[in-house]
Amino acid sequence: MQDPFLAVKEEVEHSVEVVVNLHKKWLDLAASASHGDEFEWTSSELLSGLRSIEWDLQDLEDTVSIVESNRQKFQLDEAELLARKDFIESTRQQVTHMREEVQSGTSGEGASTGCATSKGSAIMGALQGKGYGSVATGEEDLTTDIEMNGKPQHDVAGPPEEILGMDTLGMPAVMPRRHTCKKICLCVCCLLLAVAIFAIGGGFGVGAIPTPG
Image 1 (cartoon, one colour):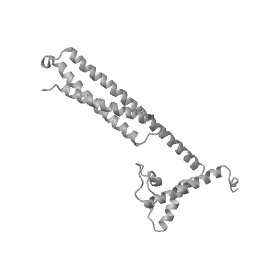
Image 2 (cartoon, rainbow, N blue to C red):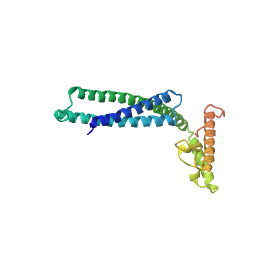
Image 3 (cartoon, one colour):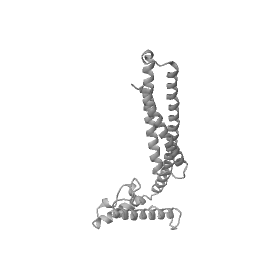
Image 4 (tube, rainbow, N blue to C red):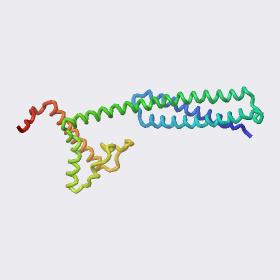
C-alpha cells in the first residue's frame, strides 16, 4: 500500500507547478496598463488553486501527526518526519506569499475604482444640493413622453449597467430599442448637466430672484 503522504505530496507538487506558471501570467497582466477580464479571471483561478493547495497541505499535516503518534507502526525515522514537515512549511510559505500578492493587487485596483466612483457621486450630490436635481429627472420626463406615445416604460428605464446598450459583462444589450432610448436619455442628462454648470458660472447673466416682501 502506497504511503498516503507521498500520494498527496505528488498532487501538491503538480498543483504548485500549475499555480507558479499562473502566477507568472498574473504578474505580466498586473504590470500592464489596463486590467481587463483576463486579469480578473487569472486572479480568481490563481486564488482558487492556492486555496486547494492549502487544503492539501492540511491533509499532509494530518498524516504527519498520525505517523508521529505511532512511529513503530509506520517505521519512519526522525529525518523523514522532519523532511515532510519542511516540505509542508516551505510550500505553505510559497502559497501564502503568492496569495497575499494577488489579494493586494486586486484590492488595490478595487480601491482605485471605488475612489473614482465616490468622486463622481460627490459631484452629482453637489449639483443636486444647489437645486439642479432636474439632471436626474430628465430620464423620467422622457419616460413619461414615451409612455404617452404608447411605449411601455420598461423599454426605457433599465438598470444603470445597461447605459449605452451594455450589460454588466460589457456585452451589447439584446434589445436595440432600449439601446436607442438609453442613448437619448444620456444625451438629455448631459445637456441638462451642461446647462446647470453654465448657469452656476453666471453664463446666463441672471441675477438672484427677489423674494416677496
